[in-house]
Amino acid sequence: MTEGNQTAISQFLLLGLPIPPEHQLLFYVLFLAMYLTTVLGNLIIIILIHLDSHLHVPMYFFLSNLSFSDLCFSSVTMPKLLQNMQSQDTSIPYAGCLAQLYFYLYFADLESFLLVVMAYDRYVAICFPLHYTSIMSPKLCVSLVVLSWVLTTFHAMLHTLLLARLSFCEDNVIRHFFCDISPLLKLACSDTHVNELVIFIMGGLVIVIPFVLIIVSYARIVSSILKVPSARGIQKVFSTCGSHLSVVSLFYGTIIGLYLCPSANNSTVKETVMAMMYTVVTPMLNPFIYSLRNREMKEALTRVLCKRKIPFCM
Image 1 (cartoon, rainbow, N blue to C red):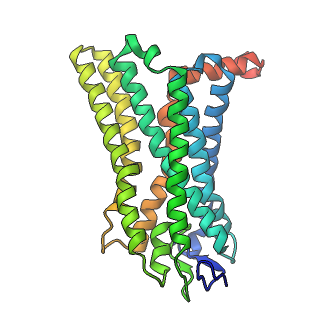
Image 2: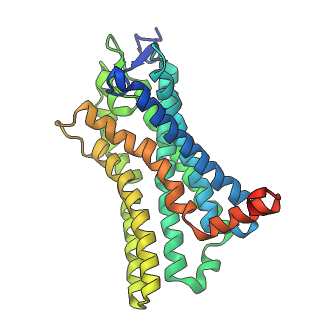
Image 3: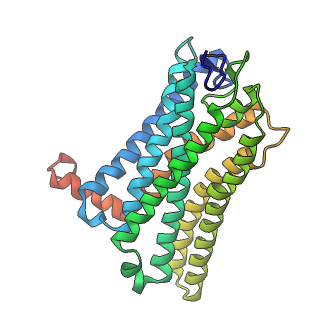
């Protein structure tokens, strides 16, 4: 028992996913494959951008940070989920639960801010091509990324500290596959109104506003392209914007639905599925949507392989 935060329990039990026992192995293999795909895809992007000098430009600088964020974001929840699916012990220490919550919020917020920065970069590149180099200077690029990292630190710490002040009494079963805010608030036996108010207010700042800024950026991009119509250019832009916006909508849509617009009809299964979409599916899709379909990334991969005289390019 710890008197500082009046917590009467030392550990939580993660209920996990509502999967029948006979399907556990199938889903374990599926989630393991998805996690390995996420790790491999994002690592390839980070390594390529580091090794190939042609990719040392603002867009790929932001992409490398997004890939690192995706890699960490998925790693916060997936290893523990996979472990619990193969173990009878699904417990997680109280301190470990708070740590998982902190890093989950941290990399979720970081992803949100980086998506905004990337949308702004594309907006400047397409709408102001002649001034792109002067606007997106190395100093501005580094400043935007550092600002994203700093803001996420304060936001994640705020929620974690507010949760640490709550009391948890008898029920310690988290009806989720990781330590998320909503399931933990349901277990608290002290007043949670402050927590809920902060979630609503801060959610508007780190979720809704970034989402609106991204939509506005892409709307301006589409508007700019349509002013100088070109069949090939329009097709390329709409293909790229459509792919990006689909992932952005998936990421923000599920988060907004879970945290800012909670419904009394939301079942535990529905909430779990929605959480899986942005914690597992989105980090896995981002490498394909943002980079691996990109011609420059494919050319960089070929250059790196050939430079090291790998048989692939001989």
